Length: 347
Image (cartoon, rainbow, N blue to C red; front, side, top):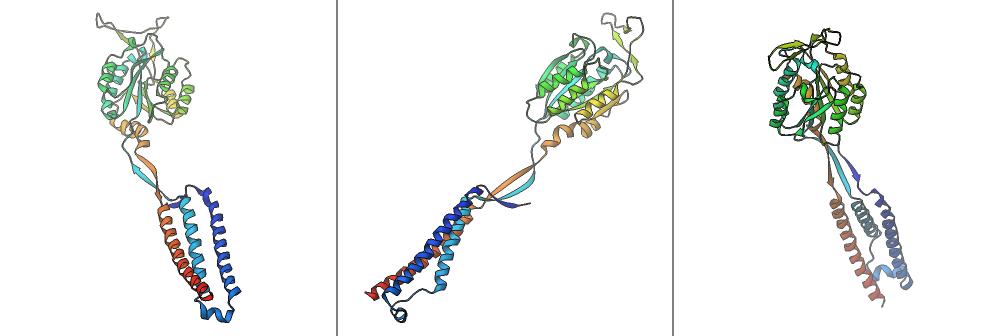
């Protein structure tokens, strides 16, 4: 919707000066008419001089008043304000992929295992982020920055291929730490900020929900992707020398079973107004996930913007004022000529 506003509304006080000027002109006109009566009686005034009609004097004062008001309005800088929705080029987003490389991601309930499956899915999603900066965080008991935010997706792919449980020196799973580290790295970046957290959701008391709340305050949206089954699966470690896989056991000799904690991942995503994608153990519809959940989060805010357009109107008021001031001067010239004729006749 369009409307008019004044950029310098305080200058309206100049209308008082216009009012004083108009009052002075009226007083002067009345004074000149009184002077004629001092020299010549009323019966002779009409014969000796051609006096302007009262209507002409009123018109002259009106022209002066309108021109003064128009000039004041021009000084107030009137503008027509229009708001329109305009399409803009997509703003480059900042996206950190946080990849769980803990030993629980070696569970084979997803072929060949959770970690390799996650890395494969990340490679497939890279072309969809061609216009965005991406970075890679590997986490287990602590977080390691494998790739800072970069447009060099070839480098990103290279460090992704090398990601493994050996990328992080401390075992365990610390979701809170990776969220806090990613938030710290994203703060201050221009454009949309997002984190894609890929994990089985197991956490060792690192307060991930509190970290997600801090991420929300920093404007970071977290999309969580859960790999694995909620029923659980044993963790298998391959011996590089022999190629043999052995199952991880605890101190009592019992096999360690890793289960997907989808509830925790869902709560983390909801804290930041993101989404939880349960990849599970089935076939992951990556294209549908990207189009429905991830791409809208990092791109929608930059597709359409409301732009305010201001159209200056002061030049119209200046022109309007000049026209009426010219009319005042024209009438003033004719009146001055008649006054001179009056004085000559009296002399």
